[in-house]
Length: 184
Picture 1 (spheres, rainbow, N blue to C red):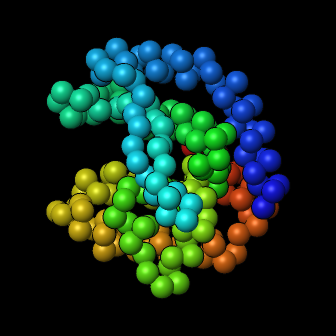
Picture 2: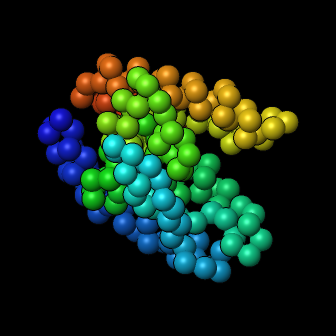
């Protein structure tokens, strides 16, 4: 959808400009807090299964591999996700689409579920709204990885396949609105 890409370009650039003081301050604070480069990068699976680099503000101290107090605040407020606006600007992500995952999940889908790979990953989606507290849900599980792999991930896949079949620009705007309203 060309209108979706134009929307992504315009609003990602606008938000980068408006939020640049927060991005810069966040980067500096996180660099000091983690005693490292404040930008976290990681390979994720993108559209058509092509890997790309996702950008976030670093929330984990590399030497101790623990989430810092500043990192907890950034994660709770989702400020650590703001650098993904550059992913949207560069076209590796969209505002709305399935959240990109690490290799070993979406790239391993089979059958009808592979249709999800035709979608550009997004900053938000129905699944990310439903699982906004995913870290807390997983912390309560005896085996978090197994719970993710057998409960959460299959549910996200089903939700993303539904999105694939029913997506519209107005639907995307609705998802964005629910995401923004859910943040308050």
